[in-house]
Length: 275
Image (cartoon, rainbow, N blue to C red; front, side, top):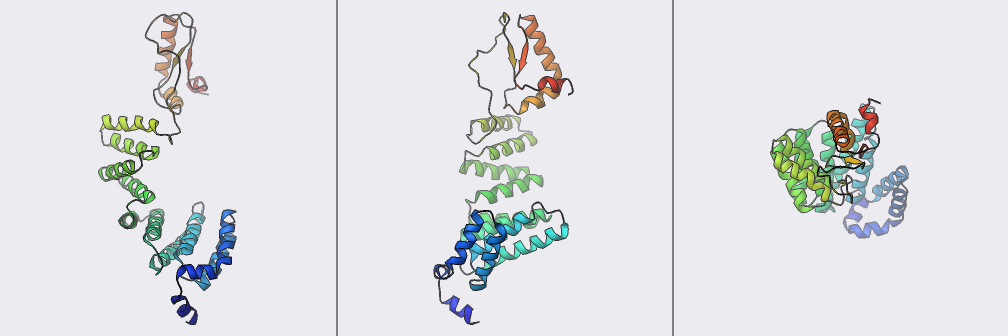
């Protein structure tokens, strides 16, 4: 067509400048989280520039978000097919760069996982990493899929690469520790499990106190605080699973002259009593 021939003679920046009002309208709508308005503007823009990979990628993301909470299976399949179409068009665009192509493949892998095609998902993640080895999202998704399929050795290698490239990822350290524990490597597993507390992004923190540790001396009416060494979140679980330990703590406090035992999680007593 005449439009296609004209577009062939222009660079992508030229085409975007020519239709900048449409792109601005779409961007502003997206920033307002008005996704329907953004989608309408992007689709109108594609009538003029049908192979802009960035816009095709954005529309794929909108379709992908739409099926996350969708309950109707037929609707999910339709949205998946539309998202796959946008990502495929972006990948085949003459303007696409390697980073955008890798991001499209990563998202295609997520869709394949959702559709119950893990082998196709692995291929998509693998291709994404071939194009952009530093794409953390693709490596994380690939590693999680390997764990799901029981390929723990391969997943361990992927998480090792993730942690090496970004030591501040608490989630990757936690996932790797669980893999090591599942494989029976308790020493390294618990070391990695503990190491995540040193990462700033880790929400769970080891209990910190300025009070001295109890070494068995008489308590003289003081309070004995009993806690796990892990983060605060393990407290309720430990209380439910270790009633005997709490009973023993109370016995120790009474034996050594303490007034009471205070567990660090306030509602532990209710858990222990079955409330």
